Every structure is written in structure tokens, then in C-alpha cells.
Amino acid sequence: MSVSFLISQAKNIQIVIDENAAEIEALDQNIGDGDHIFNVQRGLKLVVELETDIKNLPLQKGLNMIAMKVLSGIGGSSGALFGTFFMSMAKTPDLDKNIDFNKACEMVITGINAMKERGKADVGEKTMMDVLIPVSEKLNELKSSNANMKEGLSEIIKIAEDRMLSTKDMLATKGRASFLGERAKGHIDPGARSSQLIIDTICKSLINK
Amino acid sequence: MKKFINNVDDFLKESLNGFGKAHNDIIKVNFEPNFISRKTKTKEGKVSLISGGGSGHEPMHGGFVGHGMLDAACPGFVFSAPTPDQMQAAAEHVDSGAGVLFIVKNYSGDIMNFQMGAEMYSGKNDSIITNDDVAVEDSTFTTGRRGVAATVLVEKIVGSLAENGGSLEECKKLGEKVNKNSGTMGVAFTSCTVPAAGKPTFDIGNDEMEFGVGIHGEPGRKREKIQPSKIIVNNMLEAIIDDLKPQKNEKTLLFVNGMGGTPLTELYLVYDNACEILKSKGIEITRSLVGNYCTSLEMQGASITLLKCDEEILKNWDAPVHTAAMRWGM
Image (cartoon, rainbow over all chains, first blue to last red; front, top):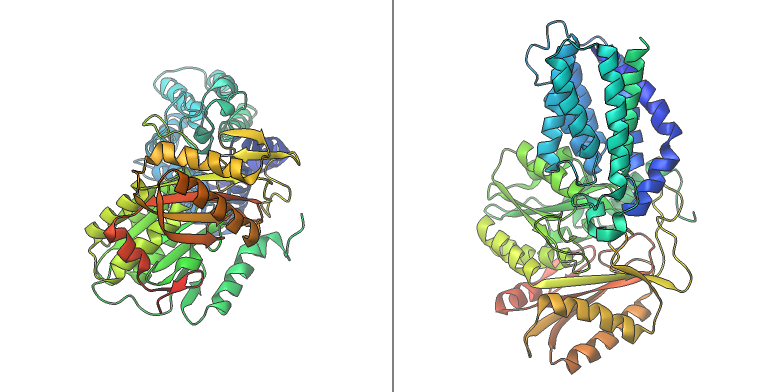
């Protein structure tokens, strides 16, 4: 993993998110207030625009710059959560050494744990954490095994999709949808959908590499 | 979408620019990071009050910056929480050494961003979270109730205490008391349109209303057929009274707040209906506030807030205030 890897992933994600923007916006308008997609799009644009400033920086420095950009440029819950994600990833030890698959897993796990802490949300509360926490658990399993990486990534794609779909029948207990009670049922959580698309994009690009 | 707008990306900047120019006798707008502060420096020993939230609720919160109320306000994008660097910069700008009290509405994005801002600010600080909306359930298993129009009352009343030398602890205590003693219920007749979205946040029939709506057009308790005002107001007050349980002859402040698209004529009609209903229940109204203070862009609708008042609350409510949106006694 390197800064240019992160930027190229952000570009891929930007395309996928833009393609699915209308769907995510509609999901948010059903159970939230419709700002999620704009926040995600604004964040991706800001990260992609950082390219010339950060592409040659060491990973830790690049991650910190991405974190500050995301934190100060997005707003809403997404800004705080994704900002926390990058900020914590940057704190993973030994980032100056070669980043292999295990190390990359460790970074993502660290980041997701910090998001969980910040948002005080766990699995089953109809938020993006319903996708991210099971993905983090799977990464932890893969990290300490000698499993085939590509097979592992395919499993992660499946987990993210299943968990995203599982938010449909949940009652929300965190986030803006929690104000709705029973009325939130029957709608997929927009944050779970955008997170699943991000994970899907990254895993597919790694599988096809 | 029909709005006074040039370019969606410049919407907030141009609006803040105008606000700064229109009220340059009392406030100053700082850009990147965005915050509105008083024109004058916080006097030594005075606790600073900072609030903020997504834009689109004007005059909340920028319109409440000034003598007797807030020291600074941090506006986010329309309906999106502001970012931690705004709160940090605002705190550094206004704190005179007596500490900063952040006033935060109970929405996940606001809570997280204010929390991070408070962590990034090295000076003494504390926070209060408002959650006056009785439309949604308060439970330890949920994010809880939303913070809505009573935030205006908290900012006014705590602002007065801070102006008169109250400590950080005392300000927090009074803020929590005002929040605990107030309940709000909102109703929407139409949706609102977020500029970036370009279309209404929700669909609603010509003969329908959303009972228990939030201040971002997020759904509330139920969708109903529209009814005569007296019935709507009675249902709103019943929800508040169920929750707040005011005693007979208890003194209250009655606050009828417009959502942005309902004329004052109607808001005063709502006030009249509310007075009659409260009178029949033996609840005394000793103070009033009617107008657009905590809005949802151009949404048609209103909220009613009832605040149970003791002497401390009344004294601080009556104290002089001079802000863009509220001014009396000076």
C-alpha cells in the first residue's frame, strides 16, 4: 500500500459512487435527510484533488493529510467517521516499512475499530458499521492465516453484500434513522450501501490485479 | 427548484457573506474555517458559548451570536454537521480563559464533530446536548430524542448567565435544566429542498401533514390528513404535556416556531389556539416567543415548545440580548 495506491482507489470508488448516487440518495431520503451521498461525493473529490500534493509523500504523512482533508472538508457523520478512519490508520506502527497484505489488513482493522469507538455503534443498529465490523473481523481472520488472498477478498465482497442487505429489515438504534422507529424497517441503510460499494470496488480491483 | 441561488457550491459562502455585511455592527464572519463570532473580544472571566450545526436553520445559530447569547456559531453545509476544525478555531478565537461551553443538538453528526473539536481544543471546555423533541422516543438503546427549537431557549437563557459571570459549571447546569424542562413537537405541511439535492427531501400529498417532523424534513411519528388548526395544536400540546407533565398553575414559556415557509399570521393563530388549550388545562403562560427561529429551509409548518420556568430561568430570559435575530432590553 502506498499513497498513490490510495489515490487510485479513491478514483475507482468515485466512479462507482457516482454511478450509484441516485440510489443512495433515495435510500437516505427514505430514512434520513438526504445529505449522505453529497458528503461522500465531496469527500472523494477532495481526496482525489490532493493527488499532486501527496502522491510522493510517505504513507503515514499522506494518510494524515487525507484524514485532515476529510475531517475538515466533509462534515456530517461521514466526515467525522471517515476522518477518524484515516487518522487511526496513520497511527498503525511501522508504516515506514514495506506494507504487505497482513499489514494492510491491520491498518484497516485499526481504522474500523476507531470508527466503531467514535460512532458508538455496533452490529445490528442499521448503520455502516453493519458492513464494516464483519469485514474487519474477516480481515483479522485472513491476516493470521495463510489463506489465499484472492479467495479471501471474494469472501469479503460476499460478506459486505450480505450485511448491507441485512440492514433492510433492521430497526435503527443509532444515527438519524433511529428517530423513525418501525418506519425505518424495509429500507437499506444508505451508509451501509455506500460502505459496501467502497469495499466491493477495492476488493475487485485487488482480485483483478 | 426555485431558490435565490447562483451556484450550488457558492450557496453557503454568499449567504454567510451577506449575513456578515448586514450585521457588521455586532458580528464578524470568519472563513476557512467558517465561524461567526461577536465583533468584540470576549471579556475576561466570561465563559464563552459556542453552538453550531448544519446550515438551513437560520437564524439558528449565527443569528444568536451577540451580547447575552452566543460568542460564536459554526455553520456546516446545509443540513450537515460542521467540522471539528471549525469548533477548534472558534474556541481559540473566543475563549478569554474562563472556558468554553459547546451547545450541541442531539444528532449523531453534530455530536461526533463537536466531540472531536472539543478533543482538539486544548483549553477548558464542556458540552451540553439538547434533546427536547418529544416526537421520538427517548431510550438508552437509541440515539435518543432530537435537539430542536428549545436549543434557542437554552442559548438565550445560558447566554444571560454567562454574560453575568456564571462559571462553566453553572452555565452547564442551567443549560441542562432548561433542556430538561422543555418539550417540542413539530408538524410539516410541505417538504424542503436542499440546494445540493435540487428536489424536495420527501413527498407529501396536498392534504397531508407529517406529525412529529424533525428540522431536516426527516420523518416523524406519522403521516396524517391535515386537520383544523385547533385539532393539530391540541395534538401537539398533548404530546408535549404527556412528556413534560407541567403542574397546574405552573409558569411556562410558550414558543411557537415557524419552519421557514409558514407566515407569521398563521404562527400567531397557532399561538392563540395554544393559549386557549393551555388555559383550559390550567397551565399559566408567563412568557412568549413567536417567529421563525429554528427553521428547515422553506418548509411549511411549525413547532410548539413549552418551557417550564422557575425564577432563575425567567430572570435570565428577561435579561438584555442583542443579536441579529433577537433583541430586547438594550
